[in-house]
Amino acid sequence: MYLKWRVQRILHQFRHALATPSRNPRMAVVLGRLLAIAFLLCFGTGLYSHFLQDPLPWMTFLTRPSWLYQVTQGIHITSGIACFPLIFAKLYSVFPELFQTPPVRSFPHLLERASIALFVAASLVQITIGLLNTYQFYSLFPFSFRHTHFVLSFVVIGSLAIHIGVKLPIIARYWRKRDAYDEAGVLVVHEQDPDAEFEQYDELRRLTGKRQSAGVTGRIFEWIDRAPAPRAPQPVATSRRGFLVTIAAAAAALVVFTAGQSFRLFDATNLFAPRKNGTGPQSLPVNRTAKAADVIDAAMSPNWTLTVSNGDTSRSFSYAQLAAMPQYEAVLPIACVEGWSQYALWRGLRVKELMAMVDAPAGADIRVRSLQTNSMYGVTTMGPEFVADDLTLVALQLNGEVLDIDHGYPARIIAPARPGVLQTKWLSALEVIG
Amino acid sequence: MTAIQRWRIALVLLGLVLLSIGGITLLDQVPPARYPGIALWLLGALILHDGIGAMAVFGVSVLARRAQRIPLPVVLIVQGAAAIVVIVVVLVLPEIVKRAIGTANPSILPLDYIVNLALFCAGVVTAAGVAIVAYLLVTRRSARVRQTGSAVR
Image (cartoon, rainbow over all chains, first blue to last red; front, side, top):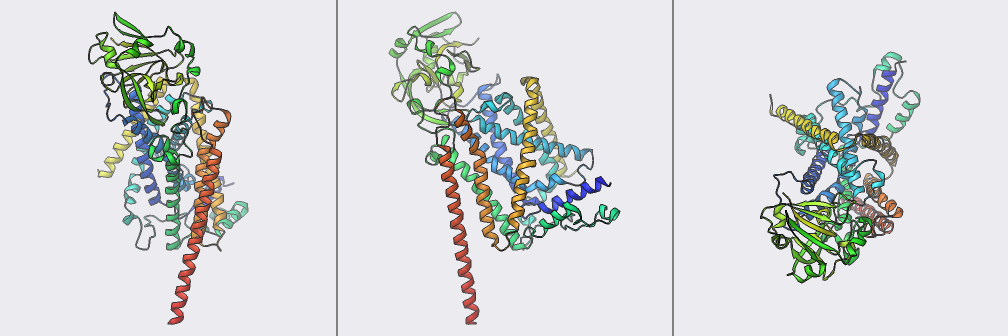
């Protein structure tokens, strides 16, 4: 009997019990701003990384500074990690909204709630799969990480825009602190909150005479209300500050203890990042080993050659022939899409000089082929801005030694400001496209 | 039409365009066989967060409220320290699991995350302890100063 009003009463009781000083519209606006900045940073840097790998035909990219991709992708991963405490805090601050009464007021209200559900779910999944991808925990995904992450980025930012649009009047009202709090630090409330009091005279009581504190759930919520959250101005302000300090400390801890994989400044405090500078063969991390790429036999073969071609003009070079040509050195970072990066000293031949040996036209794209055939990155494309750059090398040495097999022996690409997946290892051919 | 109304319309339209791009990309690049897996993750995220995580936080905060004999700042320091530890543990735990299962090569997850997590937790507990002691010392000294002042008057 009166199921609708019973549900409404329970929802009201939940909202009343959930009320705390840190759950108010001003807090939601403050946290929402920070989260939106972090999301937009992730989205912008993520799109940059995506288009470096899958450029549209008219796109051209900066090759300087050489650490550009290291920084953009480091920001992508680090701000993604910082999103965790921010989104937890934002959802905490608006959690009572989950128990709105009535749950659906109109069709637009249903759409609004559905868009928020999509926004929350997509955001949580997006940052979680992004984090798991940094250490290749693919066995948890019943989908392709790369495509799903790309699709969800538009879903997250699209639903963020709709959410901001829907909430804009509240955001504007609580944007500035001086408009949000009075001189005593108490939130300026524009509408009477129906959930402020526990023993509210509601429809169920009118129909049945039962008080809010009646029944099992009523007694539980009454027990909860006996020790309410702080309501006097000073404890309210203290509680709010404590909440903000906690979130700031959690975000700072995650950044300080993980950013070392991307930024040398934090290397000494790298406790939790999936990568550590200086680990791996030749003191450099590896994403894919020669064994995983199934190239060991082909790469170690004495008959290995690098083929450079431009239409019908084609030349093949053995390792000894390549090593006998003029060599150049470049200090460049390997900067992985997974966020880790590390500088190294590379030595090898300039790609543009190799391409000139087959009369490659200036401004041509080239196709880069690897010995590996079981990867979508076995064949990649390099735009003319990278081909022409003096720092773009076919590297034969790393830190003064012959390349380790896991770093691409006998030869690999290294270029400035490019994702690690495009720094093709175990080279087999360079071809002018078109 | 006010400026806010114009911005609202523009933002909602922008959002719909971006959602459409996401939808078209989904249809174009993701095989339909993958849709149930994605839907399961989206639904699971809501259940895990709203149904379990947020409710657990609610339960803990209700219990914390009952510690009314303890000064509020002390309760906040303890709550804050616990929240920081929980957030970091939630993020580091999958690394520990993945490292135990095995990684593609030894340069992935090369650190001892269990030891590092234990060190971090110890650091947070120590910092919280220092903060509580400092708060109690400061408040007691302030109380003594107030008592002395009123005795002099």
